[in-house]
Image 1 (tube, rainbow, N blue to C red):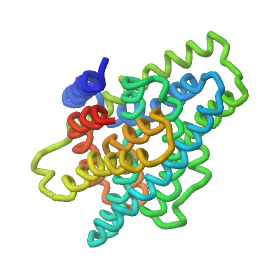
Image 2 (image 1 turned 90 degrees about the vertical axis):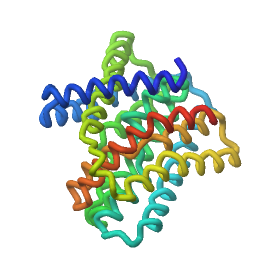
Image 3 (image 1 turned 90 degrees about the horizontal axis):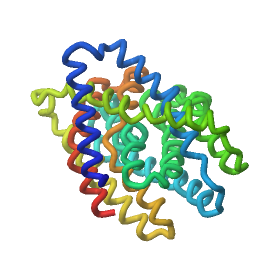
Image 4 (image 1 turned 45 degrees about the vertical axis):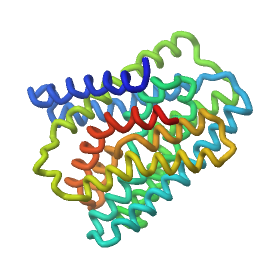
Length: 296
């Protein structure tokens, strides 16, 4: 299945999520519970299962390089947002900087990477590890000040814990027993459909009258088009493998992260803008992700 077809399939699932929201099947309480299920259970299982690879220096090097470059590109993206939107009120400016820095690299990124090349999943895990660390340290400090940053919360993030455990097992070449491996595979396989159902509930909330603010559109262009193109140009100049390059470009091309709106609610950012911008960029990404994938 090519990327365009896979993206179309994912958005059909998201459409089902939107219909479920419309009909009242996915209430706020259910959405919250499903989000916790994905973050705490299914996504970590997906990580642990996909980190079961034959050890090689090439994979180890690629993992570490991907994590390092991820953090560099995220920090640069945040800096771009902080500069471009310097005249906005702090709550809006902080959210915009985070939206440009942090894509939906887990919820939407994993399914897309699996569609393009399942062998790239180990690098997607590296990307998300760097993402989670910066999100709960730099990202939070931008929203709520230095005192809001939490190294402990970053370290205890279920995806970071799963990544660290999976990385240790990969380096030590320890394998899950077949029964546990199948269990991880089964639970991890729930991540994609549950994620897209949840994304559909956010898309359902989009109203054209709410999108008159130009910031929605300029930030979407930056997030979905310009930043991936920048990463594409830079990585072509660096001595990295095609797998590392492709992973970095695709995960940068994901829409704005839904986590930003949750963090904005906790730490005083423009929550309404964050939620709408994330949903709008998710809808637009149905067109931009296949376009980026075709020029990898």
